[in-house]
Image (cartoon, rainbow, N blue to C red; front, side, top):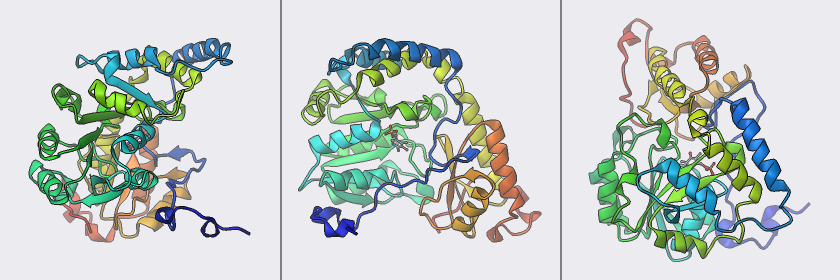
Length: 379
Ligand SMILES: *Cc1c(COP(=O)(O)O)cnc(C)c1O
């Protein structure tokens, strides 16, 4: 049998492993940060009607400029943005890939701050861009000072800031983004996949766009917007940056069906986002309860929580999976990540975890009773 290594694959891809979050059919899937609430029935009916209308003309190529979608997205974002500031693709992963195709590539580099989104180094590898792993402060925070020091040290062509950061949940201050932009000579990408889950009053990087043509802000409909299966990600930036992406996108990359479905969903954005408040409540509950159970949860501005103090993450993962609860091993020793689900799903997770007993590092229930927010540094 032929194996991958027998093929004349590019040398820089040899030995690499693909993105591989386990996909299992389980009652409680809290492993890839989806919105676990289904699409409301009336919204689903409208989406189906628009997709049905679009299918009658799929003999023709779709609108290559997806003009209606760019208009819908600019209205959804606000901040004075117009259709010419907007771009979209099949998931924000594709948007980021296009950014690397246009601004990265052989001889160029991408700096991110680990631990961060596992797709960044894979997208860098696929486009021949060198991945540079920058450092964070204690508890996975990223201060302006540290971000600037890492940018000066590595002088990358592209900087990517994940705000809030996956897999740690850490919110990123607008001051860090501004300082990173001023220190960088190249493109600065802010990945705001989880922006809708941030606390009210925390400004988005969108507020920094005017006068900053090297700043690109990516978003997705996959998380808060409950649209992961439809594959729609997007970007807001100076129109010149959008022009750069036109050079590398495949012609007609967004299908007519995708465009119709996304436009219909955006027409119902209030209903699609109705569960965000409840998801934030469940996230805050996870932080409180994990701490009470003797673990060390980190502060989170997203729809998931990273927690430390796990004696054997793989064993805990397997014990929960045996009860139909799927969470995530993220490769940080002593840590696991869990998505905030519905109230019932979150309860199922917390009850099952409690039944496994207190972690060894927690000490007795009596002394750990006063545990508050995370202090733990990476173990
Ligand atoms: C989930 C996620 C995305 C979204 O990917 P899509 O391709 O839009 O589904 C992007 N960035 C981060 C950090 C994520 O966690």
